[in-house]
Image 1 (cartoon, rainbow, N blue to C red):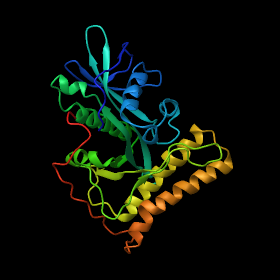
Image 2 (cartoon, rainbow, N blue to C red):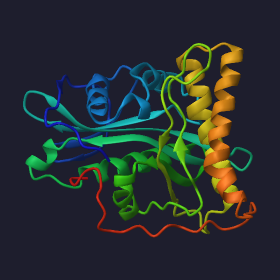
Image 3 (cartoon, rainbow, N blue to C red):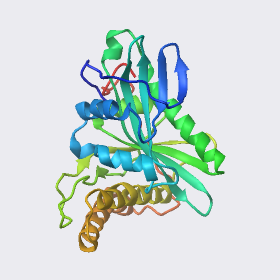
Image 4 (spheres, one colour):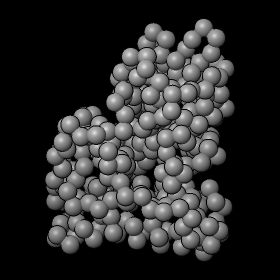
Length: 290
């Protein structure tokens, strides 16, 4: 979760159906022409640097055609409804990818989550958690409707957010030196944005028993890197074939350094169970109102 300045945008009422409504609060699933999208994106940009979030055009494209996953990319906003306007006070983005298409098993990848500290000044707590829980529940229902199972939810956490995610059932694993590959590239395929050290965290779905193996994590991250960091930027920056190959080579190198080299240097095999890292429960997190 991430903090955000107290101001929040007022916008007109959209035609989306709320996923959940509690008093004057709603979690709303966005459609491509949503009037909430710009306000939600402005909130995100006040929290995250360009090196850790997609462009607005990329988010819109994901909502329209879902070129990177099983379902279109998903965006949910937390809306406070008042007498004269609606205030976007939280936003979550993400995608749903195949883990094993033949077995019809998918995973959810949460991209960015932000809530406004304006919630705190109103004495409101738990809204960030509600946004996350309701978004995951809604996507899982969409998967169930097309007879696809959900293996897990994954995300890339900044260091100070790990305690927050740990309290919500997400775990990090020993032996992974994770980095987020670049999100921006020049036309020749060379990176225009840096890699970002983060922590891969996963939460197994309740329908799937058993612990994550090295093979599971390797498969998941391979799909994630291909969809988010090769296919996404290639479309975003309209890269030609040679440039795309250069991007893919860069991302493959980060995959090797993040997952393959640290695990396999310890002799890990595909079926070996990954050991979770025990997180301190009193650590700093990026927001206190979620």
